Image 1 (tube, rainbow, N blue to C red):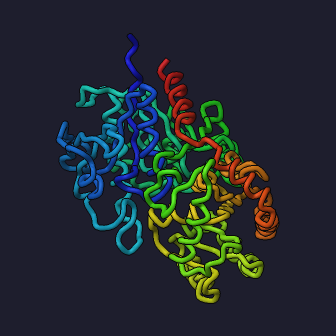
Image 2: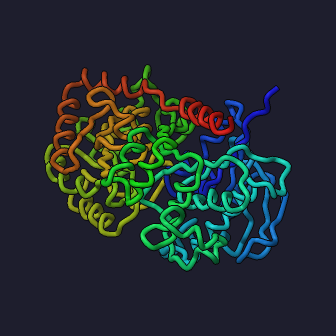
Image 3: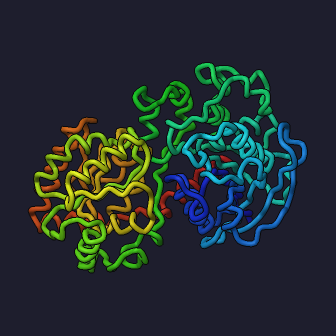
Length: 476
C-alpha cells in the first residue's frame, strides 16, 4: 500500500494560536483539510508566547547546536488545538518570546533582527526537509508560506537537497528585504547573491530566494497568479514570475465553514441560514444597537472589516462617504492600521453620529456580528491576492461590493452574489454602490441575491484537493 504524501507546512502564523492576517486563517485550516484527504501534513511554527502556551502536550524531540549565528535551538512536537494537526515549534526564546506581536514590537515597529528571526525558521524548515533531519518523520514536500519562510528553498538547495519545495505567495507586496551584508552571516553562499539567486535591486530578498529556488510556486487565486506577472501588481518580481510561469499555479483559498457558519456561529445573537434567513434582520437590529447606530431597518448598512492600508482602497470609501450617507445609509467599520486612515474614519464617525461607527482595533466576535448584520460589505481593494471577507460576507448573506482584482474577481459574481467594479477609481466604486442601493430598494431582487450568495460553497475541500494533486505531481 502506498504511504501518504508527507508535507511540512512552514508558516509564521496559524489560527487559533497566532494571527495578524489571512495567512493565519489559511495555515489554521488548510492542513486539517489536507489531512482529511490522507495527506500527512504537519505544521512548523515559531515559538511565540501564544504558540508555546496554546499547543497541546509540547515535548522536545530534537535540538540543533550548530546553526551558524545561533545557540542551542530546541524543537518541540505538539498538536494544534481544535484540529489535532501535529505541529513542530522552533523553541528559541531569544528571538520569539517577546511582548509584542510576531513581526512588530509593542510600539508597532518592525523588530530590528527580523532577518535573523525568520532565517532561523527557514533554516529549521530546510533541516527537517533535508538528509540530516533528526526526526524519524521525513516530508516529501516542504511547503513554505510568504517571505518569512521563503529562504528555506535556498537553504535546502545549498544544503544538499531533500524534499520537493513549494512556496505560496499570500501577498507579493511583502518581500522580506534586508541589506546585502546579511547574506553570508545568515549562512548563504556569496555566489547566491545575484540576479539568479537572492538579490533584489541590490538587497537580499527572502521572497525572491523562494521564488527562484523553489520547485514550484503557488499563489492564492488564479487571477492573482496572472496579475503578478504584470508590472502593475508584479512588485518588481514580474520578470522572474513570467520566467517561472510554467511552475506557477493559482489555487483559490477556502474558508473555515465551521467557524463561519451563520446557522451555528456562537458570536451571533440570532442564527440564520439560506433556508431560514429571518435571523439576519434581527442581527442587524442588534448590531445597530451595539454600535450606537440609529435603529433603522430601512437604512442600508455597509460593513468594512479591514487592515487600514492604501492597498485596501479605503481612501476611495472616504471620498464617497458623504454621498453614501446622504442616501440614508449607515457604515460600520472595524479595523486598524495607518494612523491617517484611522483618524479619518474616527472623524467621519464623530461628524455623523448614529450613521457611522468606527471601531479601531480588532475584535473577532464583532467581526462575525458585522458580517451577519450588514446588508453590504465594502471591499474595494486596489489589489487583493485572494481575500477572505468577501467569502465570509456571501456566506452570511451580506452582498460584497468589490474591485475586479485577484481573488475578489474570482469569487464574486456581479449582479448575482455581489457587485463588481472594474476601474480602480472612487467614481467606479460609487457606481457599484448605487447599483447596490437600487437592489436594496427592490426587495425581491435583494432576497434573490442573498440566497444566491449564501448558496456558494467556499469550503477548503476543493482547494485542498488541488494542493493534494499538486503535491502528487511534485513527488512523481
